Every structure is written in C-alpha cells, then in structure tokens.
Length: 396
Image (cartoon, rainbow, N blue to C red; front, side):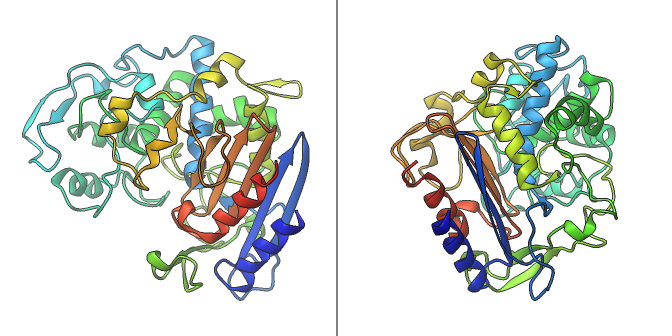
C-alpha cells in the first residue's frame, strides 16, 4: 500500500486528477489510500467518506436487485416481460441500423429479463458519433439518456421514459448481440414495477440497508454535500492524463443535489469507498455479508459467469477493440476470462464508472479493489486506473 500511495499521489501531484480514494481488501483486511482534494485548487481534503458519482458501477447493484426478485418469484429470467412492461409488447426492429425509423420488421421474439441483464435486448450505445444515425438522433431528442454521460435531471419519470422508449424501434433483434447501457435503464423500471414500490425504496430495503451502505443513493442531501467531490471532464478526452480539466458537475447545486425523476440503475448512484466495499464483499461472499444474505450463491454464480456466446461476441461492438479476447459479460458486469495486462489469473468480475470509479472482486485471491476519483474517462485509458490495478493485483 506504500507503493499504492506513491502511485496515486503521483497523479494528484501532476494534477491529472484532484483526488483519489483507493481501497484494497485482501482476506478481509482492508487498507485505504486517501490523497488530494475534493476540487481543483480547493483546500478541503479528500476523505475516506467522500461521496462520488459512481455512474455505471450502479449497474451491478441493479442486477442484484433484479435477481432478488427472481428469488422472490416475482420475476423469471426467460419469461416475456409484457405483463410488467406492456410498452414492449409489440416491438419493431430496424432493418438496418442506419435506416429510417419506419423501415422495420417485427421482433422475432419477446424481450426477457435475461436479455436485459446480459444487455442483449437489441438497443444500446453505438460506438462513435452519438448523432450518426436516425435512431441515435431520435433517442437523444426524447431525452432518454441512452448514449451519453449521466445527467439525472434531464430524463423523465419512469412511466413516461418507458412510453418514449417504446415509441422507437429496436436496433437489433432481441438476443442477437450485446449492446451497452440502455437495457439497464429498462431494468430499473422493471424492478420497481415487480417490487411494487419505487426503485430507490426497494434498493434501500433489500441491499443498502442490510449491507450498511448508508451513503449510497440517487442524490446528495444538503447535510452531506460537503463530502461530495466535484466531477471533472478532461478538456481533451484524448489526453486524459494531461491535467487540463473542466467541471462536469459541481458539488453544490449540481445534477445530484435533488432526487431525479428517473432513478437510473444504469448510472445514477452516488456512493463511498466503504459502501461499495460492502457490496464487493457481499458478492465475494456469494450473496452474503456477515448475517446479511442478499442473494443465493447460485444467483451470484450466474451473475459472475460469462453469459455470451462466441457468435454474440463476434457481432458485438465494444471499446476497446479486442476486448472480447479475454473478457465476457455476466449479469450487468464484466467477467475476466483470460490473462490480461494485470495478471495471468482470470476470474475477476466487476465494472467501472465512466465518471472515474472502478470495482473488481477476485475470488481466486480473496481480493476486492475499489477506486474512486472524480475524473470522467474510459477507465482503462486513465493512468490512475492502470496504476491502481497494477498495484492492487501485484503479488496478490
């Protein structure tokens, strides 16, 4: 952890990122590194209990909520979703991705919960310019939040979101290929309807409360805003480590200052390093943390097993190129299937947040790593991310 501190401090000193909270748990022993400040040029120091916007690290949490409802008998992995999501009863599919919105065919089959969890519902991010096709432009015009970084106050309430989304055709047939992000927005609505209560309430009752995740939520009240780090975006995304930053979201009066109309299970949560360590420990414990049993071991095993076929991967565009060579996809999270840049030992699972966060649990080592920064970037492209995982996995 001395090496970890030096590595993290280097990025703060170079002003590539204002601050870092980095935690590694090995065999249940937790060590935490805290360096830097809450904002550029600020005096308030980064703290162990600093709040960060965890963006897509929200996705695994939403998948756990869905699997809890499967275990309750309120959802089934392979049943059509029309009963709870009637908006999806008569889906159409574009004949070609860049075609006009009215050039469609009927969906070959219904969308299932398994499709949402594995991101094979047939709609998601198209890598490249976000306005390159009619379907992308139409989704943006409806403020669905489907293709960009999270902006919680822009999307409508869940029922209206579903109505707008259902007015669009799918990009591909259900089950055909992996497409990132939008499936988990739909899953957020499904979980709330299956639970019969608002999505944030269900998460608090079934996950956050039992695990002691007292600081994880979809907004930051005034009493905690002094602990929220300012969020930054590089002035040049191709020079993410250069240290030239613009504010993406301020701590006071920003996008997370009030509860959103649409609580996004794809990218909306705020959390702390200790809260997410608790989630990581629960996953490593195959559904249990102490006396709290959140899921069965079988459910966690399914979530952390590669669910995609070779044919589905071959059709699925993802960043960076070559990703599928040693990675797979479970339920709303990555599964490392082969040797990578950090270690020859596969088996890690978890996911990153595009606003500067990262989590993996590693069953082979009994290790959990959680990195929290306030730098928007593809995590693998940021030096702070690479150095964190290099040190976390070194010699473990």
